[in-house]
Image 1 (cartoon, protein in one colour):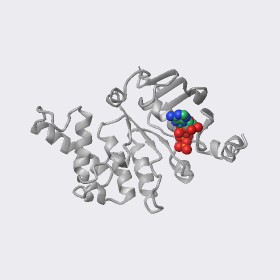
Image 2 (image 1 turned 60 degrees about the vertical axis):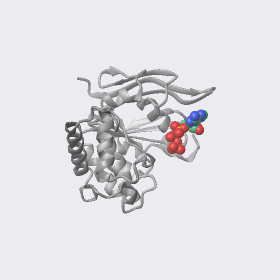
Image 3 (image 1 turned 135 degrees about the vertical axis):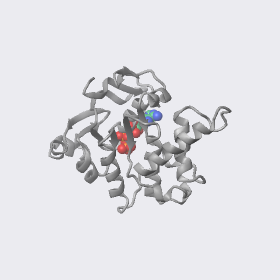
Image 4 (image 1 turned 30 degrees about the vertical axis):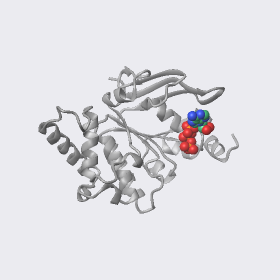
Length: 249
Ligand code: ATP
């Protein structure tokens, strides 16, 4: 088995003449917390969209867990063990936290809410999965609270929980702390660190304190390409990174 759960080769995405992603060769080590940073417009979200299948790359290949996923649709990537966090807008605000998680577990099995073969056994399995995830994300006390009544920070934690319902080997988180208050950020930081003990976590994040404290590896993107990759100490001291953020590069 390869040390790397995800590898991209020459991954590119063009919008007309503009290369939102140039040519990205990325390797994500199994079991690592790997963060992608870079100034606005660097191509971080575009990279995630290509990895999860929401955008079709113009060039290159994506290998995940030993399989070529380049042409696979998003749901097949989820089935292969790659899961992306949902957005708050995809939470069912009037349903309880547990119900939201149960529906995410149900979706993982491709079972629509109205599927006639949705049995009590299925339901029990999905409730069990929801309760397991509730403990993992430490929202057990809020299990019966409507998602809409959670704090913003708790909703973001629930988004991560929804992604965990598909039993991923690798979790992709796009700016998990965006919009969070200072009190909630340590909660998300701890959650990601905990998840990193069992899973590969790839995240895009702007909060440098969080990035430097939890990342095993950091990829810095700039103008659609990888500027450098290294551990937090290597990235922190790199002049090219400072210049990219200051717009001088
Ligand atoms: P941010 O930190 O601001 O979210 P980012 O690094 O995630 O930035 P992307 O959202 O990936 O950057 O965008 C990369 C570039 O591609 C930007 O210049 C953006 O304007 C451009 N871009 C993104 N989507 C499209 C699109 N659908 N059509 C044309 N250009 C696009």
